[in-house]
Image 1 (cartoon, rainbow, N blue to C red):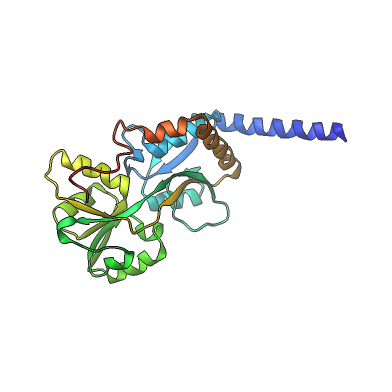
Image 2 (spheres, rainbow, N blue to C red):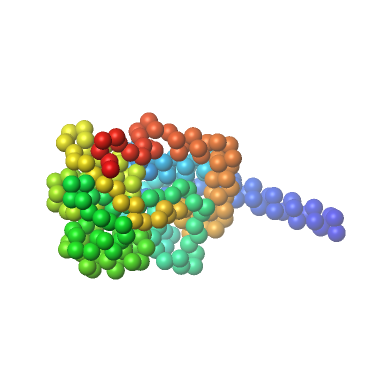
Length: 258
């Protein structure tokens, strides 16, 4: 019995080692939206989410990562068709064969308006009758009542280019923009470099949402989760999340946000 147990443990160990070795030499294809700073910077394959993913894989010996930039909708399709191995943001239905990792971090989607308009936006239903510009595929990512409310808006559009959301808001072409808080603050900072800005109010009408990575290979997802746990334990995770060389974690701007 003891010999049998030892044999099983050896087989398990060899299998795990073989998986690691296989994934170490095989390229992992990662699909991600090209316009998501500070979570993703396509110019240098960096940003909060990508750095966390790279660190987690590296801790497990996987360094050959092929980052492919595409729209959120294309990411979803590519993962389901096994054209990529990992999706950074996936809003598709939880179909068989798609495996979420442990959460990388949390997004805080918000509504943003100009303070001078004095909008009282305490829930998603308060958007009714307003003109809203949201991020692409927002109706799939945000809670179901949001999609229902979009049919009652004065104007509604979703865009890939999130820098345009800040521009439209500052030029008063729309009443409200809907997007992730850190993303908005990053683009607001960039906009300020060449433009005057107006005071804005952030309305946190959505709950924080955990953001895992999504896989179509269960062993790879499990290996990644081991890596994610490792970098959390080692302190590397916190080091990445607090890095503010490009204001990754900046939460507010004095005198501008109410």
